[in-house]
Length: 283
Image 1: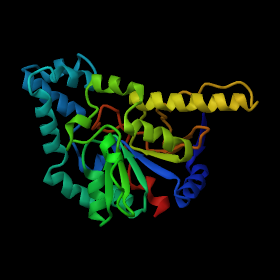
Image 2: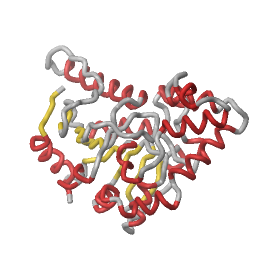
Image 3: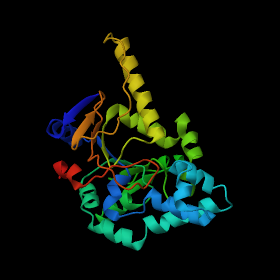
Image 4: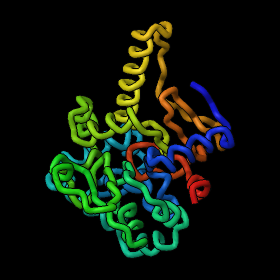
């Protein structure tokens, strides 16, 4: 996998952006300025709700596994979603979003599509703050609705808090998505074939994304083999890069520009810290 310096990657990203072929993919790190609760805090809340010591509870599995165990209690999943909604989309978080340079920089651009694994409503909220229409796509029914003119499509890859049935939060939710039959999976696979992606605040620890990445790279390798370009070379999903300000560039032109220093996580994927510097070249 090629590793590009920022000054080498930026011209390609800028060209894709001006051609309308660049799509941001936002992870939990993008919302760092909002100081949303981390998964450590949410796991501690679940532990206290079940009468466990938080430190002991956290040793028994991943965040997705702990959410799965917690949801075994009657009505517990509904309580968790409500708690997340209060903490993620509360008035204080909304006020911080309006002051966030990151969210304002994102909303300043004319994006056709934005992907996010974040459950909260701050991406669409930032667009609304800027007076821009958007359409949230989280389930099949959303894709069947007419698109408002000039609206940005916000694809909620892990669902949204406003519709708990769309959320990919528990381990079983991740397993259920492995067949890639969900509407958002189909849309992502199609977009990956013809667009460059700018991953911000995202670390590629998400199982579903890594599997799609594997499938797409396998498809490209098979195509190269059929066209006599030599045997296919396996391309693993992007790994965490400890070198600051690098762009990881797979062969299909997807780009990753993030600041890979660790940050608290909002979803089961472990995010990386990001800031408005990622969007500044397009302003």
